[in-house]
Image (cartoon, rainbow, N blue to C red; front, side):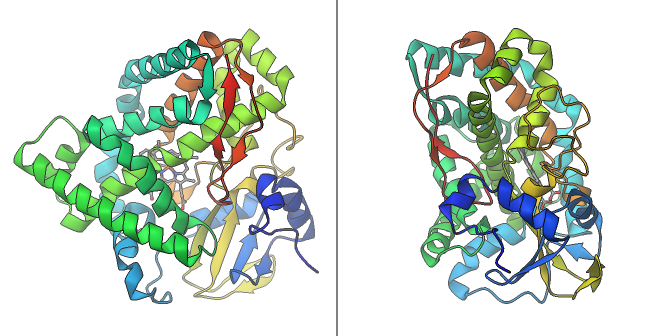
Length: 388
Ligand code: HEM
């Protein structure tokens, strides 16, 4: 039987949730021939497999990518997201010192000030595109500031990240792969220079901090690239997916405007309701079985976060946006050893932006239908036109 799951269809990308409902009803594991992966749609299985050490992000015998893709793979494969213990543990321990809840809390006044400033500018302009005016500049500025990327270099970060992230889609086209390779080469060269400059003149930033510890040169470059990309890409999408959901549920938006005490549960519910990262992959390192289906070593599983977040076995009325939802173990930040290192920072940024928009742009209204990004894995909007 054909599956409704079809990331190449724009209808599916616009709203994958009905197809997930069908997938979950049909079973716990589905072989998907176009990408030769096992799809896993249930919350309990996604959560268990993320924690299962018989699966991993790195698989030594994976098919060798074409040589021209080397700049992308060198950059990607040395970042902690694509490493396994002991390298993963070592690098994560070093970097996580900069992302403890306490360190992040100290950033709160700066992040809120930035959010307020961006929203005030949007209001002074009489509206505009929420993506370009607020959702993008805030997380880019925050992570660039933390790493010490000079202000004049920051405009290049978005296009580099977007091009590199093209490789995280299922079956990227050759054109997308070439763009990712070019961006990886440029971004790596840029970071090498920046790291050399910080080595010569250390500052009070995360790159200077990482230089002081014992990371190899490529590990430094890949760690900085991962932090800069992961540090904004999903936050941009979470912000706009959240506002798109609120605009489609005016009663929920009105309730939130009337009662800012809903903010903490609202942020979690928006992250659950329209999941910014829809899928993560794992290699099977030792034979496993899910629901009696054998999945052999060397196979790849695609864990469907967007589906897990709508699983009725875990969430009451999963297709309802409920900003008061308290029992909300969504999986948007992952689980297990790769659990999002930036989750406290992402929550801080999402809360600051949401609260600034609610209070400083109280009449914020959708001005036109937004344009959706074509990708399925990184789910977001190109633009979200608003009036104030
Ligand atoms: C709403 C925003 C965000 C979402 C939804 C998100 C989601 C995720 C998810 C699902 C993973 C795990 C992927 C996997 O298991 O394969 C992850 C890992 C990671 N995230 Fe985030 N993230 C967000 C924001 C951030 C921010 C602001 C940072 C800041 C630095 C960040 C840094 C990282 C890093 C470094 C990892 C790799 C951790 C590891 O491999 O141990 N993320 N993120």
